[in-house]
Length: 170
Image (cartoon, rainbow, N blue to C red; front, side, top):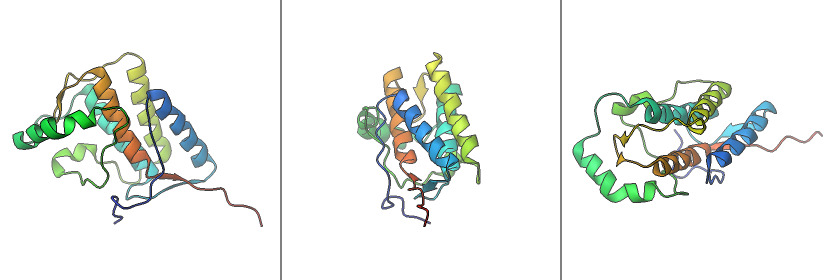
């Protein structure tokens, strides 16, 4: 297991859905040329599928139940203000609890499958679909806050996808 708090990561700074889509295009090209890698515990496909699963829950609704009240209160009082600001990324190294196993990626999912799922979510948002009115963790969110949380979450996770330099012929 890689310590993702210390793993090397590439710089990602998504300020808009267009920025995220442009990076996905770069990752697509690197994948097609065989120059895609990762520095964390999940493969690029698993990373992309995880972010897509989070978007889908935020668009279609989360499974029943909420995090424990003390956790929700702490998140809303201490973390929400920072989480909803544009340019802030989710901190790396957080192990998902079993209560959110619906967000854990399918082991071995392909890059293409993960990328397609995330692009479908982006297209839904660009097509005008809005998020569910309340986050189970952060409570009520505006569209801008919702987008910023997802851009920051994607920024952190996609930073573990590396674009390797093409090998030079000898």
